[in-house]
Length: 367
Image (cartoon, rainbow, N blue to C red; front, top):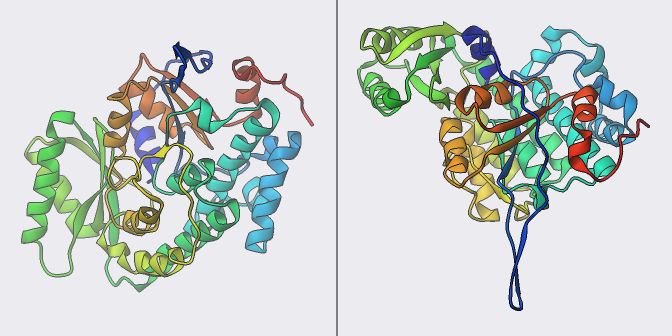
């Protein structure tokens, strides 16, 4: 969560790639036709990707986008799109607003691709992944969760996190670390050891491992500062940057939020996803539909294993990543980590226009 800020700190500059989605190859052996999956994964961003005005061009140009934004307004009972398009950044950044806003904008883009170009996640992609909040978007994209339920859940997720913060009696923080891949395992062990020596009430945990060069720690203010100093003095982290966030996400301080989510998740109907969804918690495909609510509950306090999730894909020959949603945070991470891969961020109408030929189904038609 909030990798956008640490990416800006690292000043990552990306190269531009263009490519064509390959048709699914078919190999025939006598009477057996084997359909070979493409080497492609679809990705969705999490909190921190939001900005005022995101998706407005989509809403103005595509009925399929309007359908998603309007349904979100109906489910929530207030004008979410008005907040997204014309609100203030301060209001949009509030966790309970940012989470449904990002999910809605991401799914509006996906609905354009599906409705206007015949794009199909099941036939085009092998894996789906979402960073933190984005995992809910991935579940909707793979038909494992309804849009209606997802909007309600992420609004509740944001509200429960805000309530958890208000109950805390200590100052909290999150800090991004510049690291090396060979040090990641030692960093994890060091964080565990540090917690054993901290005073009662103090805590620091790994919130995100976003790439081989970036990790984020979360917890109480003094514990995060102490951990940053220790990791740097032991040459396990090159630098540390405080993140401008409102809560210590993905650590045990968020347990009250996880408890609230558990109560709601057990009443939601989930389906088996049409393609494998990689869990943030395990960095492996979700094994069964019964596992989904437990993993979503655990995700609130667990480390986002993003680097391992992408590595899982790479080990299975994935070399094309379609990144759908506001901002280009995940795309920039991928381009930095795997510069030879085909990474396509789809954020605006212009992105869709530039890449429209790749979908090969319909010509761009602005409605």
